[in-house]
Length: 196
Image (cartoon, rainbow, N blue to C red):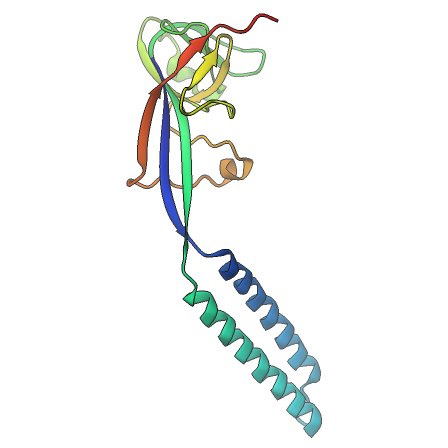
């Protein structure tokens, strides 16, 4: 069987204005420090006053920005992570795919090729006619409400349930799925490829 597993949850993130104020605070602190360092001269009274004034103004500006930053309400943002769980009896194992890695076909859905990396190939050696479960990255165009895969689809899979994401940034820094995430499971239909 092949199921689409979707985890959804909300995160409480800083408001965009908060992020902007934090950046502005850093810039203000840097500019203020440089200005004080360039202007302040304790042997010259006008420059000393100017340097102290810049320092006081910078400190007040920072205090105001930091106070406003922490007083802003946080924003609830929806998050989702999905993967395909493919389980069944192993029909065939094909080493050395043209695209790299090893291919696995299950008896229930032999028209879908499940590709795994070579570093996991040993886990599946000799598993023909044995049950297994693979966790695959869903195609970005897969409809979550009515998921269907065309015959001949190749899925990138792994032996452990990894949080596969569509965004390149999320691939590098995948967010942790909290235990409170809502999980929905939807069966995937296999359809014939349309005739050209």
